[in-house]
Image 1 (cartoon, rainbow, N blue to C red):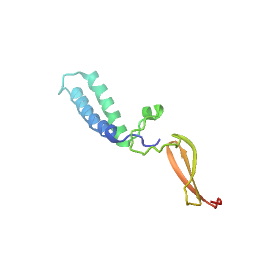
Image 2 (spheres, rainbow, N blue to C red):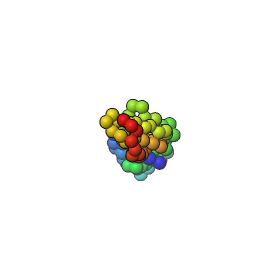
Image 3 (cartoon, helix red, strand yellow):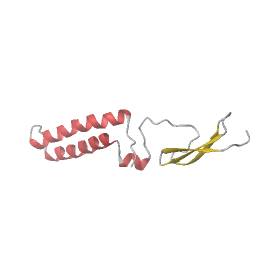
Image 4 (cartoon, one colour):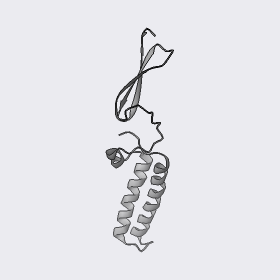
Length: 115
């Protein structure tokens, strides 16, 4: 699973996760009169937020295709699969980029094209 949580989503998950974990512990130990069930649910939700924030991976975001990292989106490049080739003017090298699961792999193929 690739990292796909970044920016404000990443920071928000860590900060809110830590706050909800503390609130859940406070409710479970009796320092906050919210009850054991609310404390348990809060602890579980807080841990999930904190772990997904620190690892920058979320199975739900991956399942629905949400990526909040700051990766540059290049026009014309397929999002999750395919190959894009380009020949730059004045350059006799074919540049091929293969995109698999959101990762770009550049492969220069040297050769002359009679340009």
